[in-house]
Image 1 (tube, rainbow, N blue to C red):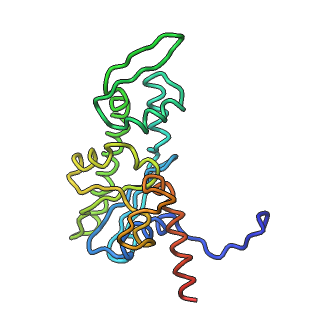
Image 2 (image 1 turned 180 degrees about the vertical axis):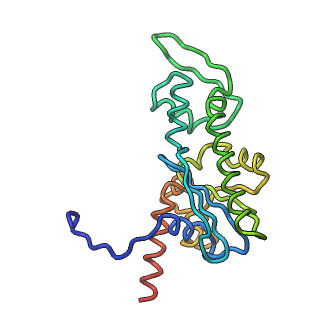
Image 3 (image 1 turned 45 degrees about the vertical axis):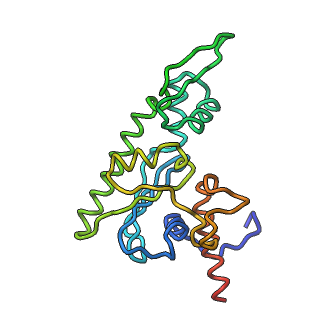
Amino acid sequence: KLAGLKPIVFEVESMAVARALIENEISQYPILIIDLGATRTSFVVFSGKTIKFTSSIPISSHGFTQIISKTLGVDLKEAERLKIKYGLEEKIRLKVEEEKTIKKMERGRVFEALIPPLVDLVQQIKKCIEFYESHTPGEKIKEILLCGGGANLKGLPELLAVELNLAVKLGNPWLNILEKKEKESKKMPLEKSLSFTTALGLALRAAKAEKLT
């Protein structure tokens, strides 16, 4: 009322995310979507034409930044910059200016700082997969799609693929919106659009509703 808007529909976030990332909203096998957001990470298992399971954990992209800040002794702004620039690259060289001196840090410090939360993340993903597969006999998760701003962490898909022995890749929120030859919008590159996966899924619902009417 305060905004002067009239809600047309309420939708669960996981439905919008799946609509954006699952091609034609149908899958021949279970796919695990991991939405690594600023405040939490959500798990969504999609199979056939529907969502089969959802859950969330308090591991987040901002949490990664806080850990880097604390471990390396830099402020949050610098920690965020280091996270984006280096990610999980092990061979890096950092220089931090501190009280008019340059303090050289060993290579791989960002990666080392993130090891504890990454180990926790991997364990939580394994628990999610084990829970789903134990409650749905005959269904095995074969693929993982990453989305959310935290999915842009360099090296994350490769690390998860090795640890989980599954195919892991970045999802594409434009998959069901643009022509197949176009992988991303010229106005919003894939890396940035991962943070807007839910919004793009909602927009896709609205677009389909307009076509029906």
